[in-house]
Length: 362
Image 1 (cartoon, rainbow, N blue to C red):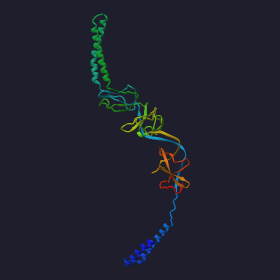
Image 2 (image 1 turned 30 degrees about the vertical axis):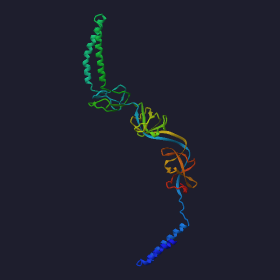
Image 3 (image 1 turned 90 degrees about the horizontal axis):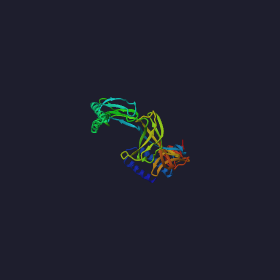
Image 4 (image 1 turned 60 degrees about the vertical axis):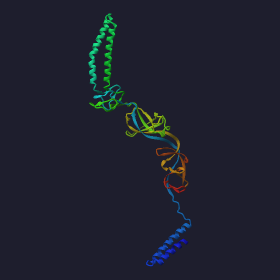
């Protein structure tokens, strides 16, 4: 109050000395209003009056043990275990293509032919010589059987005949290099050759895929190494055909790729008409199971200096509880400690909550 009096004295002095041209009555009324407001505030503070705490409406989840699986979810691709490119073995010009995409082929079947006319001409040119040397050798054999002639003559005729045979066989093998042949039984997936085009070994060809040995492959970050193993349950979600395949992991690599810092996992698939090479899918690997887990939504967890915290209802008040987190999967979090079965975890209305604040369960 003394302070208020000291504040009023300069104001009254100002009115009397410097504000002679102002309306004294209006100024006096304003000052009285200020004094009234100050008196009310002082009285409120002196009496220790406080605003009553607001009751917060909340929603709760009653915690009960439940079956909990943790999944690793990653994008995967279907590939063929036998997915090969049948390419020419010698450079040349494409003469004809004998298959088309989608066609079923067998191992050894000719898929395309290159122009091998030069080799064919060489083989044809050697044919008369082969016939002649064969005839000479047969005559020498006949004479030798009659004790006519020498053994050297017979051996020379034989060597010349067998030599030309081997040359022709080599030329035929060279001609075979101008044929594109399927190395497996499968289906033609793509034809990357055109008639009249120049082809070279390894640059282009005809892709053949075996549908009998398909697999789904994915790469996992190195932080998952040791957390998945062969035989873990897997769900392959095929979004394009609206289907899901439940199976198990067939292979888990033990080494991390130094460039990508990832390792490969694989699921071998049985023959299925819905599955095609190069399809994409989602691979969900179930690598953890707890049949009596206490689980809460991830969204209710708040990070504090003391650790992970959430609110429960204790009586008619909110109570903060520090918890120990377990596995996280599909928006749900396993709680290892800090909660008990039957606890009411606040799932809505906790955003501006204070410890001990009255609550009303909606």
